[in-house]
Length: 187
Image (cartoon, rainbow, N blue to C red):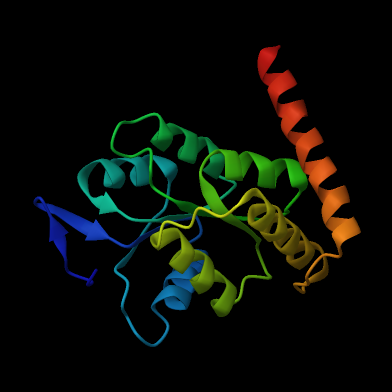
């Protein structure tokens, strides 16, 4: 879709950046419009603003920070999922610290990628957004590999492919994290 496309009278926003830091919003907007300007990128400062924009525009992907004063980025995604017509918006979450439980929660809420702040690069971010815009629905193994890669980048600053044994161990940790979430929700 072009930068000025409209559908049924609603403006099309390819990527909605949600971050309370003006510096971070500018940084992500520049990463996403780097050179070609093929995506219409709009930014807002709060989850409340993002929710309002999503109700009045056709947002194709949300790139959200995790930490906000009133709620977190995953809460925003869950709130969007609860509204008919907004439930299918794919998302990318950026956080100060990537941990397996946070990655699992983000993926369960509809995120297709989770990045640690400070290790985001143009290639990885643009690739994640491209996959989100293309409706990426990977296999469980692909999602697990993606979780592993993002956990590696956030902790070591570099991405690498897991060995079969590492992937198996990571799958156990991810499943335990999901189970803990379910048990906590039942309290």
